[in-house]
Image (cartoon, rainbow, N blue to C red; front, top):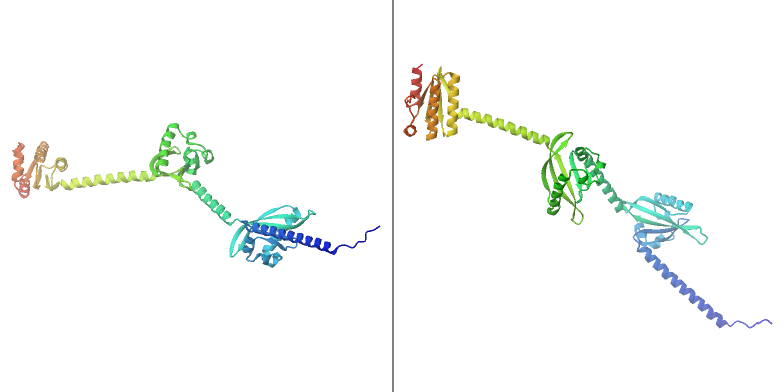
Length: 414
């Protein structure tokens, strides 16, 4: 027998209300989860968007919306070609097709004009699968790698510059760490050492040089690290079998936190400079000697005034060195001119000490030994007393009072 009792409408209404309440709660939970999801993707340090197979935008995060210069509400539901330039959409479409065809994530890098600046982006696209395992959408995550690429380019440029300096600089350059391991060397360093660069870099100085030399270098290295000051020194290196002069400077290199981590040394070949200095010194010495000779000639002039007669007028201060020069010049001149009479005029000498007087007297005697006569003119009272004081025998020396009288005396004897 079938129960035909009609359903209680109150019970059905209660069940319906319960179902509606459950659905509302599920909707609220879903909305809350969606809000959490949105806030989560908004907080990511990258741009994120999702498009379906029709290139319709389904999800974007706030960084993507800000980059696209639209609100999230303006973007969701729109197709890519309604928002972005055709060239950019075409590139994204091609990349998305690779995802659909390979059923795998892809990564690409693009230069995109962003708000008037060309920036570098790395874009990773990931397939999203439905319950039937078919791809129904793709998610793109976009990383702004402009700063990274700029840093890489700056590093590459710095490395090219450093490599160029080390390869082409006509100087010995090296960098070594505290253990004396060679971190970098120039081509000239390798040439001086007679080994290729790759056989030097990575080795310690103990493996390259005599132990005693390395010991001395390490003491200097410790001082450089401790004092944090550059040092300068001269070195002699043998290059192609020939000793060469080098001027070297060594200084510490520092980390970002100002800690010394290595020593750089730069040595410049100054052989040609040293040679030029030596030649200049030799030339300077030659000039000095020539000047001294000229000064001697001027300070002790010997003037032939007639055949067989020479005159030496002395002016200024007379010391023992000049007096000795007087004797040498007088004797040489008497012989050269074959003079029978040599007149020494000392009128211009304000002071004649005993030593100078003795040299003058000895000069007279030496000229006499050559068969010539010395006439001494310009003798004042003080000089006369000095000559007497040293016991000079003036009997063989004519002493006219003035140079004029002396010349007249010499000419009468011709």
